[in-house]
Picture 1 (cartoon, rainbow, N blue to C red):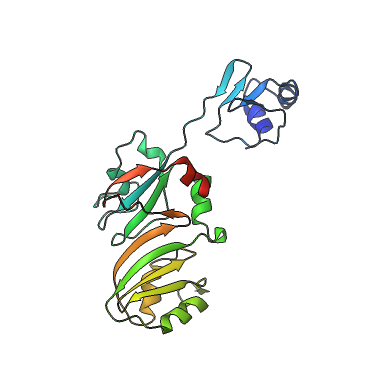
Picture 2 (cartoon, rainbow, N blue to C red):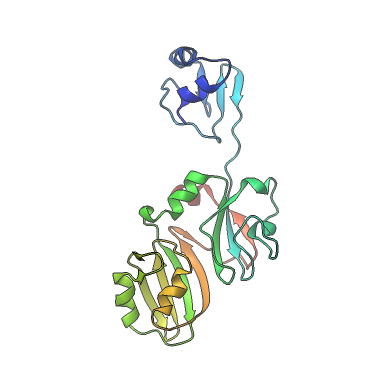
Length: 230
């Protein structure tokens, strides 16, 4: 929210008080004096009035996980282990998953407490492609490339998928780049050709590539450079 609104929402300050404090150079956000009430602040921002702490600001957290098959992309589940069960981190209830994967799909999963960051990564309008390695029961032919690039009509949702890029690696394996995340989208796209997907693994989300040193079930914190890329 805007800084002036944050201040005026506090019980001890009115809107007029907020304007005076800002004009007097008495408000600091993350260590910098701010006089513009339009400055956007978040739950991660440290906000001070002179030497008085108004909001401590909680740390933003970002993790990359190599999700194994058989683990649910959820914060809790009555039957299966969840991806949060794989994390040895405090306050896991504050974390959420950016870009879920099906139970039978493995690969890159991003977990954070920063909702704006994860939305930038997963919203179709961001045009950040998600790359999947797909293994199929039947051969993959060049016809798939053209059909996927044009988009496929899904009658149940009454929509046409965004154009997708397919790179055939061998007769039964390909890399598929999607720019959205429809329900069981990869399986339904290959199902258009009556070709069953028997293996699905996400390798990349936008600029972030799954760390090859992470074994299934392992995770690590993202670097500052990786966070800034999104």
